[in-house]
Image (cartoon, rainbow, N blue to C red; front, side, top):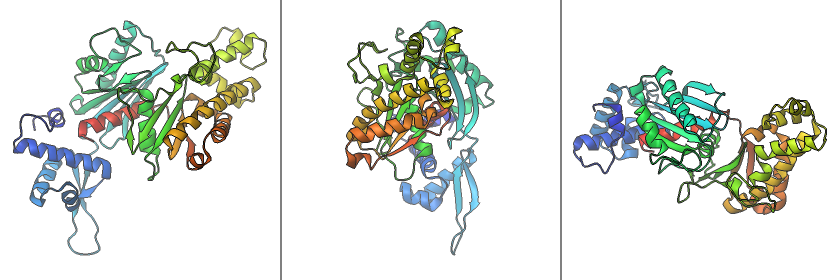
Length: 409
C-alpha cells in the first residue's frame, strides 16, 4: 500500500484483480465491520466476513502495522485460551466536515470512530449567491485544513453541506453557485486535493441525529428542521432516503396555504411562507408596524434586524406577541407533520433548528395539531423529541457520511 488515499480509493470494479487488490478489499471490509460493530476478535471477524483464519490473521496484523487497527490485548473468557481483541485506531485516519450555513460556517475534524477532534466556527459568514462568497468558502476550507493540526495526508475525505437543493451524486447545488460548468464538488476537490462529498445540510443533520441519538429499535425516523427555512430528513430502514434525484425532503415547499406570498422557490403558498423563521420574522415586523406591543419594538426602532432567535428569546421573557407567533407556527406545521406520519409511519419525529429552542411554545401546539389531524393508530406509535445536538450537527453528520463513503459502508 503506497498511501492511505490510494488504499481507500480502490473499487471492486477496478481492472486490477490480483491478490493484492483482493486483500485490500478484505481489509476495507475489516475496517467497515469494526466501524459498525466495534472491537472484535479474530474469530468474530473470520465468522462475520467469511475469511479463513490464516488470511484474517495476516491482514489484521498488516492493519496493526499500518496503525489503522490497534491490538487491545487479551479479552476475558469463561475458560480456555484468551483471544486478542482489536479495534480501530483513533489517530490513523481523519475526516473533515463543513457546514455552509445561511449566517455562519462550522468546520470540524473527526476520527475513524466519529469523535470530534477539532472544531471551529465562523459566525461572520453570510451565504450569498455571488462569486466572492464562493471564493471565501473555498479559502476558509483551505485555511481550516491547513491549520487544524492534523497531517493533511491523513484527512481522507471532506464533507461539505449547505442549504437548498443539493444532489450528492452530481456534486452540485441547484440553489447556489449554479453558473459554472464545474460542480462544487469538483471545485472543492481541486482546491483541497481531498475526496469530497457535497450534501444537503438538513439531511446531514438528520444523519447525525439518527446516528448519535437513536435508540436501538429505531430504523424509520423523520427529522424536522425548523430554522429560517423548513425541511425534513428521512431515514427508512436505517438508511437516508434521497429519492431519484437526491432532492427528497423539500417539505417546506409543499403548497400548503392559499395565500399570495411568494416563496424563495418562486411558488406561492408554500409551507415556508407561514412557518419558517424568515416568515415569523416578517410577521413580527408587520405586527410592530401595526402598533402591536412587543419588547422587540425598541430593537426595531433602532433599525436593527430582528432574527428568529430574538423572537424566541422574547417569548421566553413572556412577550405575548412572540409567543403567539411561535405557537401559530407550531400549530400550522403540526398539521403538515400529520401528513408526514400518516405517510411514513415513523418510530420517531425529531424536531431541530432554531425554533426547537422555543421548547413547549412550539412543541405543544405542534403535537396537538399532529394528534388532531393524523390517524390515531399512527400518532400513538410515534415518539416526538426535541434535538439535543448543538449547532455543529450538520458538519458532524456530513463528516460521518464522507467517512462511510470512503470506508465503504
